[in-house]
Amino acid sequence: MEKSRFPSFGLLYYWLIVIILFLPIFLLILFSFNDSTRLVFPLRGFTLQWYRQLSENSELIRAVRTSILLALGSSFLATVLGTMGALVVVRYEFPGRNIFVAVAALPLVIPYIILGVSLLIMLHSLGVRLSAWTAGLAHVVISLPYAMLVVIARLVGFPQNLEEAAMDLGATYWGALRRVTIPIIFPALTAAFLICFTISFDEFAIASFLVGTQPTLPVYLYSQLRFPTRLPLVVSMAAILMTASMAIVLISEWLRRVGQTPQPKKK
Amino acid sequence: MEHPKRLLALIGPPGVYLTLFFLLPLGIMAVFSFRAGTIGEARNVFTLEHYRQFIANTAYHRLLWRSSLIAFGIASISTLLAYPLAYFLAFQAGERKLTLMTLIIIPTWTSYLLRVFAWKLILGTNGLLNTFLLSLGIIDRASPILLYSRNAVMVTLVYVWVPFVALPIFAALERIDRSLLEAAADLGCKPWQSFLRVTLPLSAPGIIAGFFFCLIPTLGEYVTPLLVGGGQGAMYGNLIQDQFVRALNWSMGSVMSLAMLLAVIVLLALFSRMGSFSKLLEL
Image 1 (spheres, rainbow over the protein chains, first blue to last red):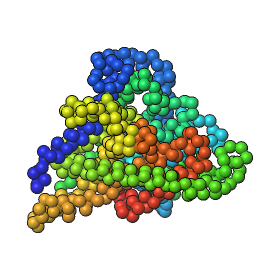
Image 2: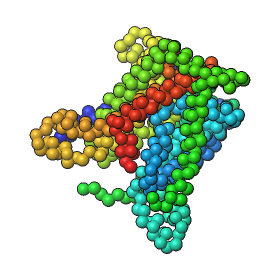
Image 3: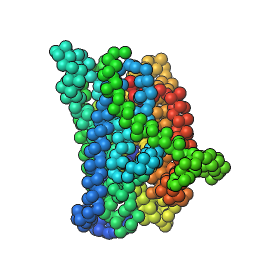
């Protein structure tokens, strides 16, 4: 191939980008062990005190719990609704199909601030009290397209005749879905769930409008960024979060690949 | 149509949910934009006053225009930086390409807020960049101008977007039939010629998708300017946020949001004319 003339440049560029991408994460982890309240160079010395203080901060722990519950709830709903949407898109032709796809995919690109303030206005007009759950309503909207895409990708290579076989043997359509399709695509569903989970868990732009007095973790962390003495705490929390979410992504990536029906090899 | 009942049962829940919590709020926001005020009697008075104010206030237009330029710049730079990356992964990375792609994607799934915050540590007066430049002797005292500027917003957002823009470009490059390149070479094309005449045009859908997927959300960005932008780096999204959080003028905020929504719809229309949405999703 003619391309092999510049492999070293491409490889160099790739690793440069990777280093830059990981640099901020690495910095946060570095500073989380730094024995100083000021996040500046040069580093002062090694300490674990910020991590110790983390476990004693009850506000923070409450925010973590809120975020986890919220992410669990919203990603479960988003995965269920997204799977239904994916089945519709892959299996059915009907007038209005393109409109459905467009509406479901729109939250991928719409600026989050618009989603946040429009829901804020609606909930306020209805007299609904704001809480972490109202932020969850929006999190389902933004994670649904991701769930749908992951499940669509799985269903495209899925042999539909398995469902038909189950139905020939006496299963209803829903029975076939429940006992044949869902178990087979389960790794993809888990991957979709994990992706939705990380989206909800990290989401700040919408949540900051909708959580009321029940801060999620990002909202809480943001409120702490204003106090210079709290920064090391935030940074050590960040280090934990980033390590954990990287682990989740690796797992979901692995699940997504394990679950793929082996495609016939192209020539 | 086969099995309309099954279709209805499947499309119903997501359809109803999206209508209630996505489309309906946008509709209510449109109604709100005509209200004279947020509380009391003013709620029931409908007026065009906020639209008049919005159209008359050139400061709003300037900010909207400037934010559009910033978003356009961010999307262009991200696409330029992402293309060689995607090209390397698609054509040169060989067997390891999916692993190497995953390595690019991993950081994007960690906390957005905190990664943006981390850029303060890099661009700050005593940050990594200043320390680095000082130790090399390139500058002789720490420069405070790196942080809290429009450039800081652009650098940070380009950082955030490059991996996301690389994804659709990578997908488009992957779909290119390799035999076309061989054919071009057989017919006497030099490598750069076959790149310009074969690879680049065929990867255009990915470039367009990556560009717009970055451009449109960036238009409404308000978190990054809040963290690293300072006064000079404020964007249109910050103006909207102010109406809801500080000024509590929700009607004005609704008008501003609708103006942005209009911009988004125009961009999406442009996008769907240039490349097909469903082709992108491989449906």
